[in-house]
Length: 497
Image (tube, rainbow, N blue to C red; front, side, top):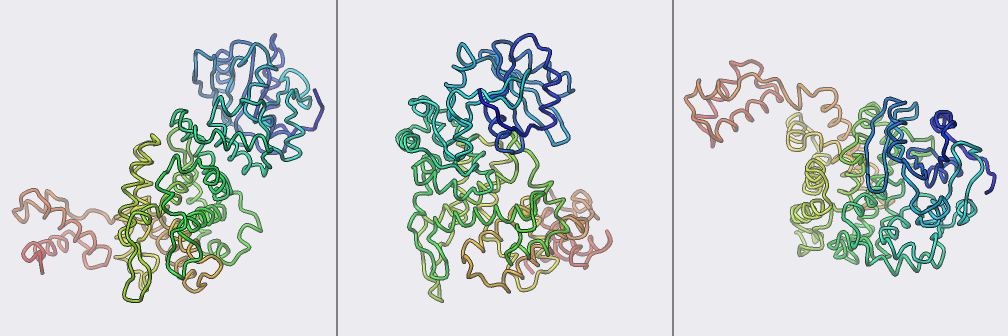
């Protein structure tokens, strides 16, 4: 046991007060100890007890008026979700994995996750049988024991994520084990692979982690089609091959989202391209934050779904035959459509929710949408963009901006970038500030009214007429119900005119 200075949150200190009188030992273990040692924010807390994990989690939830879940009755694991001044805190309580705390810690994945403190005692006294504190301070990732990764291959992907997340060098034998057992990654359940993948996608340096996972052979097990992008040359104006471009897009998307996030600092937007994001989009910053931080199924943040779409956005390029256009530019025609079909298979295999699957496929399918590059962004073009994409248009705007930066590297055209950001501003202003005028004008006449007035039977004509009326409202040609009916009569009489 060693003494350090750990940065515990007020929520943890309150929890200590609540449980200080417990008759049996209660330990905070794993990532929360690591984060307190490194001075990082604590969002998840694991508690280990000799027995009664579910009972303890229920007690904590009841005390704070939070939610309780019995996660695993066989392993005596319960979860309490409580709201704190720093946000929602997830607390998992479980019985020891072995017959003692030490055996529990030695049976964990990496030494930095195998530390504990006694919640009833000194929170600066780390119980550390594998030397995790020294490894954490030395920025070293080391497995707890010789068969830690062999017994659970998901730890290979977790090792990549942890090394990137905390800036750790992977110890030699640990790296060799990761290499050796990475091919067995899919021996674990796809849900565990998916959850670890999404933790990786949520990292500030996602592209770096993906590059390492790719180098170690894990990424291609999850997304085998991505291998076709390696070495796939693009047009001469592109700075990278198709795979390098993909990683660059992921990185740029992460930078753009960081620029509009609450974590933005004075240096975040020091580059011209990101500085223009601040200038152009800051008035929407709070609403964009709400959009990208909303939580989906299994507490997946929405922005990680968009990052997955960025990873897959060009997957179709390796499945179509490149062609030269009239200007001798290399084109991958239909790669967006082909890629969307591939993406649909992959997100279904990951068992994402239907809404998450639909969003990824939508973004891959429409990432070539030209609206940001139009010389004249008319009200009708704005309306059609949002009519096609709905709320997914918010995600697509950010993906298209990242796609542009990922194509040219530092050689991007500043004037063209400014135009794209200005168009992004115009589109977002329409969605957030003029929704009823430009996105979804009020209904002047409905389908039943049209059928009755024009003697139409139900069918595609009715929907087409309603679309014509809506677009005429946006352009200012239709203001009243009488205008709408007159337009419908004219169009119905000559639908091909």
